[in-house]
Every structure is written in structure tokens, then in C-alpha cells.
Image (cartoon, rainbow, N blue to C red; front, side, top):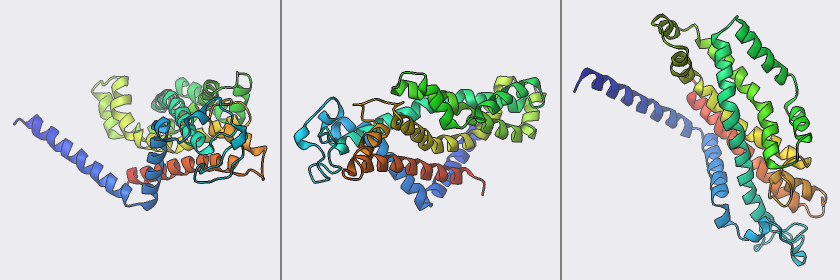
Length: 295
């Protein structure tokens, strides 16, 4: 066995040991494990919704007025809505649209937002930094919900345009975070060493800087899932998101609000599902942040 193999084996062992230590720290926090359990249950419901919901016909264009406004019971745990559709089936299926919205938005905004922040942080006190950060400040100067409403209001109301509206308002937060994190490590000795040996910008950004800021980015991504879902639900509640009969949680809350307080279950359970998702991802994000933090 050569020296390189010994070194690589040692590095691999150290990394595995570090991962085990982080995992032990994570699972030692009961709230983190509760958050993980909630997130796993939401993901399970979203993935297997077509197979576990008791009334698949309630997802689409379905009407059965003889079953309208049935209160919660064994047959309908969350009751039925004004069209006789099972609220439980629609709520579980609504997890799909919420997670799809969050996944698409974050997959689009994280990479460009982080990359712009890394470039601005690396080229501090230059015109590149000024241009990137002033553009970021312009977007951050507008309240996120107001900006999303403005964008969504000029587009056709549907799920795709909701994603576009939220995407256009979310990238500056990752640019700001990456800029701050990069600025704190750009003067570290290992960055200077990479510059002295002639390492390329690509190598420095993705091999030296990125691994040192990914912890904060990952934590923010986890916490942002709840916020993205909340903004998406707000757009749907105002009629600017997914449209009926799509079982979107925000749309369901808006439809049920017309019948409060008499048929409370039509609104309460979808609203509770939104809170459930947000709580789960917030607890999970806090647990990841604590696990990745320095002792």
C-alpha cells in the first residue's frame, strides 16, 4: 500500500468519523428528530399520495353534493368540502404541490444566487462586487411578498407562474449569505496558498471556498422550504397561485374561508397541514445548523 493510499484512507476515516459525530449531535436533540420525522412523513405522503389516499376521485373534477360539508368522521377524517370531496385526500395530495413548489424554486435560485455571492465576496472592493451587491440590495429593498404579488399579478394565475414569481424574489438572499460567508474566508491562509500556486478561479471558488460555506447554505435551504411554501400558499390564497380544482393547500384554505365558522374543518385542516410542513422544516433546519456549528 502506497503513501497516497494511506493518506486517502486516513482522510476517508476522518470524514466518516466527523459525519458520525455530526449525526450523533443531531439526533441528541429531540426537536431535531421531531423535525426529521415530520419532514419524512410529508415526503412519504407526497410520494405515495396516489396509493394511500382513501378517495382518489376527490383530487380532480368531482362533485357529490349528497356528501357536501360532512363533518370529520371515520369515513372522512377531515370531513368533506362544498362539493362533497374528501378533505383528507386533498390535503395529503396537496403535500405534492407544496414540495414541488419548494423544490423547483430552491433548485433554481440556490446555485446562481450562491455563485454571485461567492464572486462578489472574492472580488471585494472592485466594480464586480459593487455591481452584484447593488443589484442584490435593490431586490432586497422590496418586501418579498409584495414583489411576488406584483410579479404574479401580471402573469396568468397557475402553479408555474407562482414558481416564477417566488424564484425572481428569492435569489438575493443566497447572494447576500454567500457574500458574507465568502468574505469571512477569502483571506484565510489556504485561499492565499491556492492563489500563490496559480490555482484557477474555478478551483478556488468550487474547491476551496464552496466546501467552507456549504453548511450555512444547506441550513438556509432547509429553513427556506417552509418560507417558500408559505409564500406559495399566500399567493394561492389570493387567487394568484394554483387554481381549482388543483388540491393546493393555499387554495383549499381560501375556498374554505368562505364557510367559516360553520364548516370550520374545510379550512382548519389544510391550514394545519401548512403549519405542520413549516414546523417540520424549521425544526430540521435548526437541527442541521446546530449539528454543523462549531463546538
